[in-house]
Length: 388
Image 1: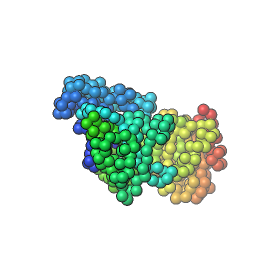
Image 2 (image 1 turned 120 degrees about the vertical axis):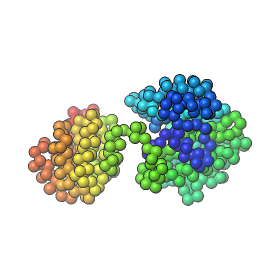
Image 3 (image 1 turned 90 degrees about the vertical axis):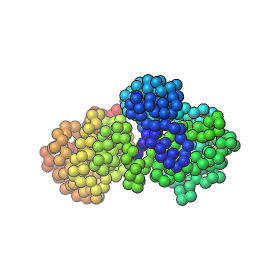
Image 4 (image 1 turned 135 degrees about the vertical axis):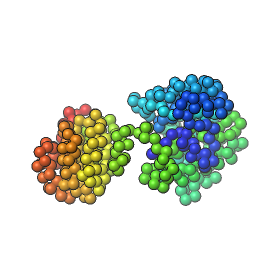
C-alpha cells in the first residue's frame, strides 16, 4: 500500500526524523491559511502517488500567502502527468504546504528489502534529487549500502560510515546519524517494503531534513497497523484493483487485451509469459486463490470485463483446493448473469477435471477448451484478434 508524502512525513516525524514544518490543504483557502501560519514563503506540493511531480508542474515555490493561494488554485484539480503516472496522469486533490529552507546539498536515503539476498538494505548516495534508478544505472558506485539486522536495527557505526561516505560535514554528522537510525526504525516497525527520503537535505547551517518522503507498506502486514491502513487513498488506485480487493482477489491491471484468470501467483506469472510468447499481451494479473468459490469466480469475471481493452479471457486453473467443477460452475454462472460475449478460453487440470469439462460442454455456451498451456495461449491470442 502506498501513502502520500505528507502522511509519510507524519510517520517519520513520530520517529524523530527531521521534517520541514507543513500541513495538508484541500482548498486554495486552506493553502493560504497554512502559508500565513508558516510565515509566508512556502512550497506548494501536489500530493499524488507518483514521483516526478516537480517536472510535471506540481511543485511550486510561493513568495507569500497570496502567491500560495494562486498556485494552489492552479494545481488543485489539475491532471498531473509524470513519468510514473503514465499518459493518463493523476488528478490532484490535495496539497502539502511546507516551509522553505536554505538548501546546501541534496542527498539520498532509502531502505528496501533485497529479495535476492533476503536482507534489508539501507542505501545512501550523494546524488540526491535524482531518480535512484538512473544513479544505479549510470554510476552504481555512487550508492553506498549497509545491511540492516531487523533484530537490532541500523547501528550507529553503520550510519556514521554512510554519512561520511556521502559527504556530510562533521558538524552535521550527529544529526544525520540520528535521522538514519530513526528512518530504519520507522521502516522496520511499520513493516514498510520501501522507505525513501529523496532528497535528504543538508542546510547551509548544517541541519538535515527529509525534504521528500515515500513509504510503501506490505499489504500482508496491515492487519498489525490499523492506523496505517486507514491512510489508504483509493482515489489514487485503479478502480478495478480497488473493486478486486473487496472480494479478496489479487488483481493488477496491465496494458494488453487478453484477460487472465488463474489460481496461484506462480501459475499467473507463467500464464502471462506464455501469452507473450504466443505473440499476445496480457490485460491483467488475476489470482483468484486456491480456495475460490463459484461466487468469487463470478466477481472475478465482472472485474475482468470492466476493462474495455479486453478482447478475450484465458482461464488457466490447476484444480486442487479449487476444484475444476467449482470453477466451471462459476464460469457458466458468470457467462449467464453477466451476458459475456467475448471469447473465453479454458484450460483446466486436476481435481474433478472431467466433471468440470462436462459442465462447460453442456452449458450451452461456446467456451473454447484448450489442451495444455501452449494450446490455451495460442487460442487466446487468436480469439483476441491475432498476434500484436
